[in-house]
Every structure is written in C-alpha cells, then in structure tokens.
Length: 388
View (cartoon, rainbow, N blue to C red):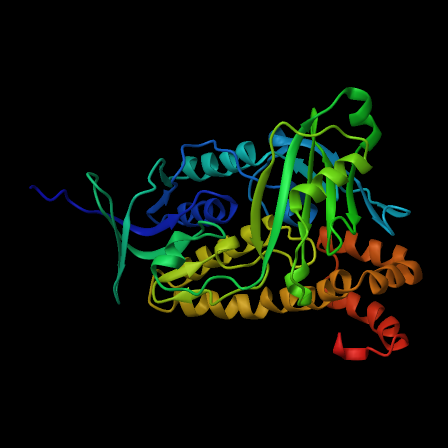
C-alpha cells in the first residue's frame, strides 16, 4: 500500500462553528496556512436559539447584515409564572436574530476568502499529538500535519475525548423548536427577545422572533445550583408553548450546553467555545465567548509566530480576560436558579435595574461583577450575604 504524502499546515481547526471560523479568519488574515475540518457538509442545521447579542456582533471582523433575520432592540424578562414583566429598550439592537446554518456559513466563507482551506464531511480521523506537532490521519485520504490544533468541535468534542479531557460536570440541558406561525402571531412578539424565568422551574424559556417564524426553547440550570432535575424537558416545553397560546411543533431538538470551563490547553491543542465550556452561565448564550475564545487562540499563535509558548499565552489571557467573568456569572446563576422565592424577591425589589444591567451586559457596557453590588444588599436582607 502506497502511503499518501502528508499535507503540512500551520494550524488545523476541528469544527466550523463560530469559534473555529473566527480563529480561521484571524489566522488566514495573518498569512498562516490554516485548515478547518468539519464533519458535516455545510451549511448544516445547528440547534441554537440564534441570538447574537450586540457585544458579539461588534466583535465580528465582517458584516453579517445579510444573515440577520430580525433586529431586537428590546428584551423582556418575566417572572412569577409570567405574572410580572420587565422590558428594557435600547437604540442598539440588543439581540440580532440569526439562523445558525446561514450565520456559520457566512463566517466560514469569509475565512475561505482570506485563504483558509475548508475540508467538509471529514468526520473519521485519528489524532496524534507529539511534542513538536500534531497529525490527523484519515482513511483513504491525505493526512494532515500541523504545528497547532484548535478544537472547536462543541460540547461533545471528539478531540477532548480522544486526548483524555474529563467530561463536563455542569451541563445545561435545553430543548428548542422552530415554529412556523402566521403574521398576526409573529406581530404579537414583535421585535423583542423574550425570557421567561421559571420555565422550567430552575431555568427559563425564550421566544426569539425570526424573519418568518419563532425560535422557542427552554433550558434548565439546576446543576449550577446543586439541584438534580426530574422534570421532563419535553413536557416543560409543551407547557411553555401552551402558556404562550402556541401550537405544538413538528420537530424539536434537544442538546446540552457546558457552562463551567475545563482546562483550556494540553500540549499543542487549545479548546475554544463549547469544547472548552465557555457558554454564559446565566443565559447559556455561547456565541459571544465562542467568538472571543476563537480570536484569542488565533492571536496567541500569531503573536508567537507559532512557537511553543502559544498555548500558555492563550491560557493566560483567558484566565485574565474571560474566566473571571464566567465565575461571576456562575455566582449570579446560582441566585437566579437556586430559589424561585429569592429570584422573585430580587426582581420585585430591583428588577428594572437588574434588567437594565443585563441589557448593558448584552451590549458589552457592563459585566456580571457589576451586578454583584446590586444583589448583595438583598442577600444580606435574607441573611445570606456572601454564602450564596
């Protein structure tokens, strides 16, 4: 049997989602030989609410207006079983609604235009990591050798499993559907991103209006608050749709979102996005930190000219710029989802200010650590203080 010659690149990226595509864009723009490997054929469906918050949109190095289906300048938070509502408006679109197949494809095509190579339908490979290189072998295809590998292959990362990373301990189970509705129903939800706390009891439900339909889902955050769920997510979604006077969907998709990071690097391999567990622990929104971590990993390689310090540089910057905010977010998530009574009391006392703070976080004007000062007086009133 004749051994096919190896293809040599500077960086191989596994996964063509936002984290992988963002890394590819920056690497290719810097002139590094970049190869993105995607197991599916693009564009492919991706379960996701598709809410691109303003801070994430501002981080993009390209225009995505053509794939935005609706601009939402308002967010609505409801609580007490939708008995009370808080609405915040902003001159900027707080959430730009996209469908992931079109959004991801837009990023990938931009990376391709800059010189990145995209290998689609490549789900079968074997990874070897050495001290000075990584290699991927494919049955019947040319093998790949690279200086670095960026794993952007999601919560169930095959790269992480093969290299011995421990499974995630804290996952947010979610279930969603794309619901076709008539124009009158679509108008009822308008240009507002809706978040209903308490559906399910330890999480929230969302209604995101798109171009001609609604993206609707629920997520459970109980594991962050030390709770074990026994509710049926499908039943909870049905109840949620009925509460909004909406018909049952033809199809629904379940998935999990990791909200507690794991070790980000191992040798010449860097984890980004959901593969690293970088989703927002309060909202489970993953696009912002996927884009940020993809860029950070690429910059670490570019600045080191692909030397052996890139992994350490990426881990250090993530520890300084990204992980502290996630830690503060987990603190807030335990308050919001650990006790319905405490959550209601927080919103009753200071709801409009908290909602405005959340809008500022969506825009990148504020951080979760800024919300801590608003929550602490209430906790002290309940005798909880810093223990929460």
